[in-house]
Structure formats: structure tokens, C-alpha cells
Picture 1: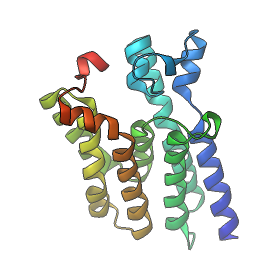
Picture 2 (picture 1 turned 60 degrees about the vertical axis):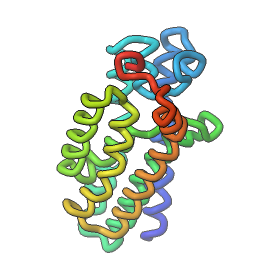
Picture 3 (picture 1 turned 120 degrees about the horizontal axis):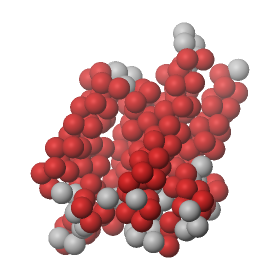
Picture 4 (picture 1 turned 180 degrees about the vertical axis):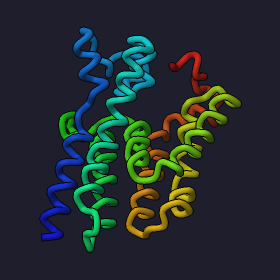
Length: 202
């Protein structure tokens, strides 16, 4: 029974995470967001190309597709013997859906907003501190990517402090590593001094 629940939650989380809201919002406005700006389907590029209102809408929807499956899983599996393992797998699958969407031939966004939704459900205290680190770094450096990388780096440490759990820790580290991997082009531009500041990218 636990295996069936694991499979169902993982498939549901992955499919929900795979919905490319940024792309759909762009299409509704007559634009393929992948052909403009950075080509990314996330909130930053939507903001850059379609304006702040649609960028915020994309952010909230990408966040929701991380928050919703984890919240449902946590509520339905309270007291379940394997709740932590299934919850961790569900969280990771929601994130993977955004980054490697089945609807986009396993391409997708960088996963920051969806990861934030996952951690809003899993460990809001850790997310709040990670968000503070994001804001400080963006304010000091001017780079959204630098803030995202910093938040991803501190989240596994914060999670272990606020929510000690081996399965969830494994999922958190996996998400953090993948966020860094998805930002590899940004990292190269940061090192070369060619990354766009937030005024030019948001």
C-alpha cells in the first residue's frame, strides 16, 4: 500500500509541477515566452517581457504547484509509517516537474519559485530565513540569480535545523544541487561579470 501511495503522489506532484504556467500565460498574451528575453519560462523572464503583474501571477502559480501537492500529501499521510519518505519524494517530484516538464519534452525552468512553494509547505520557518538571505544578497549585489543561489545553498542547513529528517534532508539537498545546476549559465555570467542586474532582468 505504501508503494502505491508513493507512486500516486509522485506522479501527481510531477504532473502538476510540469504545468508551464509562464509559457501558458505568455501564449494567452500572444507570445511564446521562450523566444524572448532569457528564453526561460519562469517569473523573472515573464516580468521582463510581459510586465510585473503577469510576472507576479507566474510566480504565485509556480509557487502553488510546489506548495499544493506537498500540503495535500502531508495532510493525508499524518501518522503514516512512511509519511516522511513519501513526503520527501512528493516534494522532489513537484520540483522536477517544473525543471523537466513532460509537456516541454523534459525542459523547463530553473525551479526557484516551485522550490519555494515546496518549502513553504514543508518548513516555512526555514523558507523565511532563506528568503531573507535572498533579499539581502539581491539588494547588495543587484543579481536575482545570486540571491537564488544563496537561498538554495542555505536551505538544506536550515531544513536540518528546523525539520530534522533524513528523507526530507536528502530531497532538500537534491533540490539545492539542481537549482545550482539549472543556474550554471548564470554562474558563468556572474564569474565573467556579464550577468544582468535585477533592474535589467525583472
